[in-house]
Length: 204
Image (cartoon, rainbow, N blue to C red; front, side, top):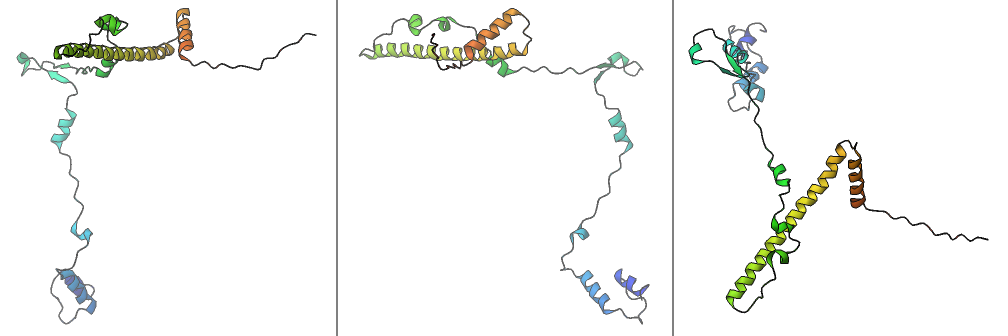
């Protein structure tokens, strides 16, 4: 029974020995196995796929893949002439932010100490539309000069803040660099004034 009938029933075959009846648990097992409405286990639905074996053509292509650009003369095609290899050159990239941070050269409007020196005295507002347009055009020029002046001062201040960092990173071996560094420290470092109690010495 264990050697013939039960293995045959588990494989879906008819009972080869009719005089030996199947046990009750085997009937139940076969009903569960052949039940189409029963939910199957996930390990019965999926199986591990075999790993693909590498072919010889792909191995040869990977080994013969050039790292540099190969150039052959048109007259040397078909011959055993050597192939000239041109190494690939790195692409140079520029930094736009570094160009934008550099202060522009001072123009005539930046050199002027005040907008009156550049534009002259302001015109009166007036009462007519033409006088109002003249006054408004003058004010727009003044506002543009003030905005340009603020941008120039901001760029110069950024340059002055970055210069001490550059000088600090370089070795200060000369006397001139030491004096400049000392002057910059005195101008930009907050002073802390300490005052002690005054003692009056009386001579006897």
